[in-house]
Image (cartoon, rainbow, N blue to C red; front, top):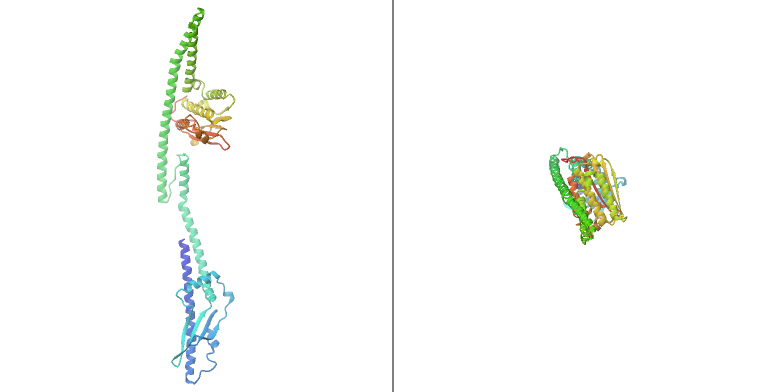
Length: 457
């Protein structure tokens, strides 16, 4: 912008200088013609009358005229008595119309378009000599003088603009790296670091960025460690409660059920009315034992510790297929060394799948629910990872939310989503949940196989 402004100002100054040069040529013409007229009139001062051939206007003015210039001899009244104009070279008339208009606007501001000089004879004013340029001639004269300089100035401005662009582009090149780093950090990649830069301001930004990234990495690690300890403590508490229920209450109920069966048998032999009460007591104990078994399964599935993750998930999917009775088809696909995970990780994966299937069964109104669990190479942070994807073809997240289904454990929102996020954070993994184009909902989780600070399976 500054270069363009300088170019425009320079062009206007050149136009003004050209107008001054035109004025100087007019002054030279009127002075030259005026001196010759004075000389001739002084020769005629000794005679009675001025000869008829006076002033020989063409003879006097032609040698002094420039192309496009006119010389006039005017009487005292201002009437033009004689006029001589030099022919205009059409090849030299090259000024465009816009430049001619601009020249008239600039040159007419404070500058006269013609020059005049009085002629005296015997002490009185005999007339005046007037010199002027045709407007197109003066504009063409200015155009011819300004075009070479404007071409040079335009080339210089182009070079300056190019150099400025290259310098600024080189100076601001680190900004792209900074923006890319911020985008990676926004996506959760806290391992990104910026290099040092030559420009002091960018180098300071890089230092602050790296410091913030390091602090966020540290904070995320501490948060993940805390979440892992909290969820692991919850699982240990579940395991402890399940063990207590199994060892104490379940065993007691089994003994009570056996005693009720013995009591019913004896009562039946004696044909006592106690047989009915004993049978009812036996039924109550059986129902209570079923309730305890379901509670034990919810707290800590026994097969998870005894048989491992793969068998437990297969049993879980079979259970949901039985409960759905054909209305929804649950499928499970697994790949990789999944039984090599530690006990806490197995529990987290099992709970995540359980909560997602509960949501799909209750709220998705889906015909198909697919679970894919596989081991990947070069997953999270370049290490081996576990990838879990659960997708259904039912209604999406917004419809589930509009239906008020946010408190029940769910993939799309509510307490279930919070619980899943907590478990994913405990696994130092990544989490995404979104509607699927064409209908349905998908949940994707990825976490490293090796869990820091985890105990063996």
